Length: 202
Image (cartoon, rainbow, N blue to C red):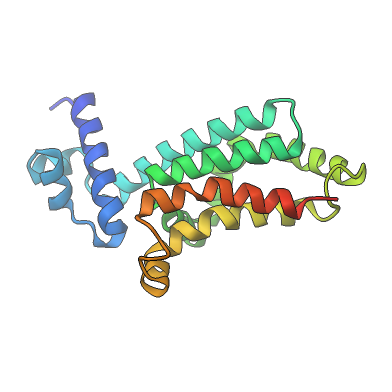
């Protein structure tokens, strides 16, 4: 049997929806097959394990994210402007793939070398240039002095952590303070950048 690109794409889209609702551990191959409108045997023909299917989706998402980050890092603009674009694209990708943070953490713990090489090949050169730019702007007083690596870790933490803990926070804080997922998490664009902008004032 020859694999059909349209069927494969349909499986990917169905898997995204199921993974978004159930996560990697909770998702079942039968659910993915039902969501895609195919039988389980056909699903196994395309993807024998759900982990391989998840990995395929993950690689596709990371490719999109790294491509977007490359474009941002290559453009000539200030550190603050780049950070704003960085926050915007990262939040957009996570809004479409809210399971991603937990999967990334799992991959980093279980396959650190593989994951590191994957990112190194795509954004390492551009990221190093951005770190140099951050240091220059810190040195000339455009933004508050500090360690550029800590700054990037702060930014990543502010973006990623809310996506990972949203279900718990909603239970703890109550629905009167936290709106439905998409609206609340989209607000992170403004909130994160405002926090960073104020924190970097000289």
